[in-house]
Amino acid sequence: MADVRDLLEVIRGRPEPRDRLDLFVDDELTLDGSHIDHAIGMATIVDAALAEGLFPRGFTQADSGRVYHYEVTV
Image 1: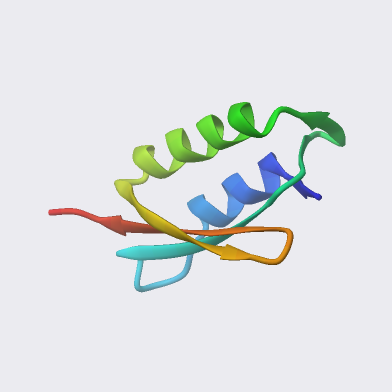
Image 2: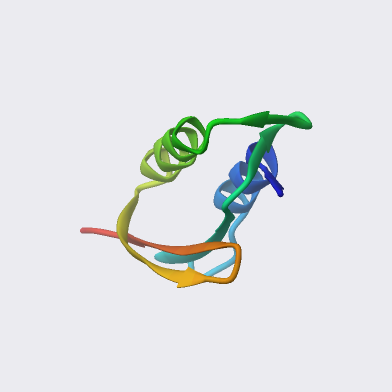
């Protein structure tokens, strides 16, 4: 399980170069330790990525989750 707040910190604190991000998102999400619906968690994650100028560019299926690919678009 992954906590949405931890994933938001990864988005906001990503290292250089800041023009792309590959983010693993577990199939099971929590918020402050409580299970939340995956769609709500993903909406929060995508909103934070967009606020950082990162746009979704697909995903790769992984064990117990997905790796979402984000890039800055000029």
